[in-house]
Image (cartoon, rainbow, N blue to C red; front, side, top):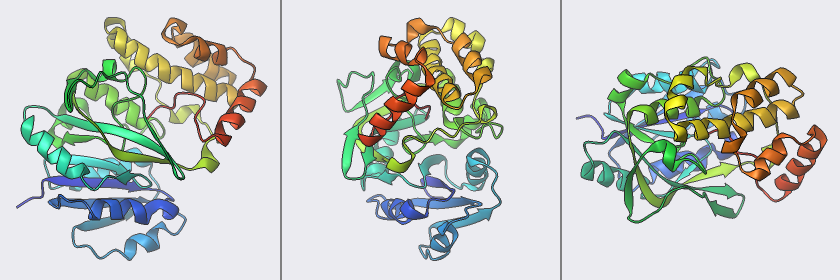
Length: 307
């Protein structure tokens, strides 16, 4: 009999967090799952850590570096379950995460996409993520774009979905090597509502050393061009994508990518941004870099990062 969940963990140089991440899955109170771990060409100690695992539910695939999109797609192709649960190689699940997901799926079997509230973890500091959601009950069925006006209601460590919906939405786009999550969540949201558990069950772990890291290649990012027609018909989708365009425009400016900044700046409507973000968008590069350093010291992101 096939397991209820297939947990897909993509790994690239996550040795410092990997053991805690995998332990958080193995220690789940709900145990009917398999784990497929794709080591996407790690160059650190990740391979040795993975090769030392003995749990019979774990299948490990070592591959050359192909990007997280192909890693996840390869894992999904091997999945025996009807439900896919994604987890990044440095994030943590609450011990009741899969139990809560299982119960919510059974209570909402006609739905296809499930998620929960998350919190950001900065060393010992845990900060719940603010959502544009009115939590009038423990579990909500929501429009993804309306629910994601402050922060994406889906993330690469909190989403569970029916494998069969990929026939409608398509898989992760391998041409997108950064921001691939956002691209797929848009396609999910265009076709399906999301079931949202209003409880923090996932901890998104930030490495404080990388908070001010702005390594950026515009060719790796989603252009969003293919959603132009849908944006014109859905104001909440337009606002959601514009918040991502804002982030990409800021990162372009920080990396002296004038072409990238112009591209994303021209495509977004500034009316969809707060006055603070409009100010940041028009600020000189040196000021944004200074603000980034200040925010990094406090363990916070300056701009909205696509998930």
